[in-house]
Length: 328
Image 1: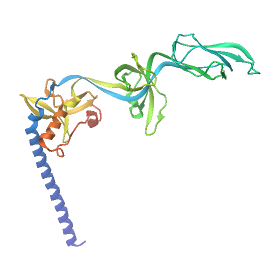
Image 2 (image 1 turned 90 degrees about the horizontal axis):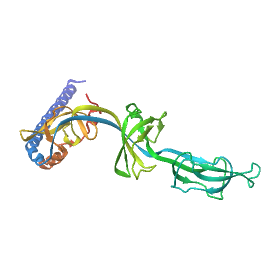
Image 3 (image 1 turned 135 degrees about the vertical axis):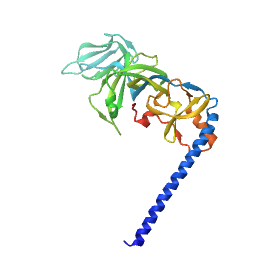
Image 4 (image 1 turned 45 degrees about the vertical axis):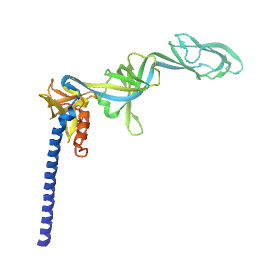
């Protein structure tokens, strides 16, 4: 290659470096102006907003999954022989005690279905509710044909599925909270009773069945309702924590708005685990510090006051999203 070509490449490289340095200088100056502008407008943005004190308490990690309500026991009762249904003693929805007669069947002859033999009764193996009746009086049934389904609704459990990536975080005996789409104001405690022995493929993932007890009841609770289950995977006790809306992400730096001598200031914080209610503060704040309770509202005010929506990239991020869900 000629010296002329080398010189041209050298000049091009130097020009690119110079442009990069200039861009960094401009970016730094812009960021500095933005920071100064934010600091100047912060008192107005925080004015009138409720404050809270940084406290100490537990922060929890949950595994969430969906499922459905299932009765404690359910059994499909079938005829033990072919014959004619001579009597149906219950209707769907009836509550029955153990031993209650459900149906009667006149056995058919082994050689002639029209020839009737002795009569047998189908009885309830346990107390519960009749959820379905599949036969009518006067009809015929074959051996093994389902006739009546009965459910024990004295208690319920949630039949749910966890993602395979959460398998190591769930174990039998873990506490859980069960909520219901149809009953938005109802939450009932529960416990992981068992974990399936095999994984199941789904459309775009692999899941593992889990059975979670539902401790307690509600008048409107019914089998088949959709459940949302939160399994308490672990807890970090007695840590410095703030509400999840009490911090904002400013240029990639989690920050809270702290009051010092009555004046607000942005203080950078290092965050750990978040459970949807509280976020663990690793550094930057101490118990007793007074902070804006809803920093997100202050963020929106700052955007309007500064008019720099594009340059000021605030957004909420859970601490576990930013730090991988772990605490140091």
